[in-house]
Length: 56
Image (cartoon, helix red, strand yellow):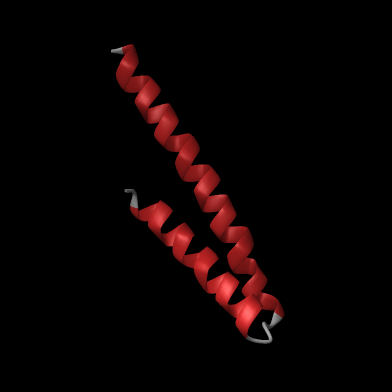
């Protein structure tokens, strides 16, 4: 598993815990945005890398 995906999942877990168990300040919702962005970005980059390997 890629370190970027692990970081993204960790951000989403911290966001969920902060939102549902505590009174979350506004900045904690930035973790949701960054976590989803990282998941999308790492997924796309992995698919592009796999496609380039298949072209050779």
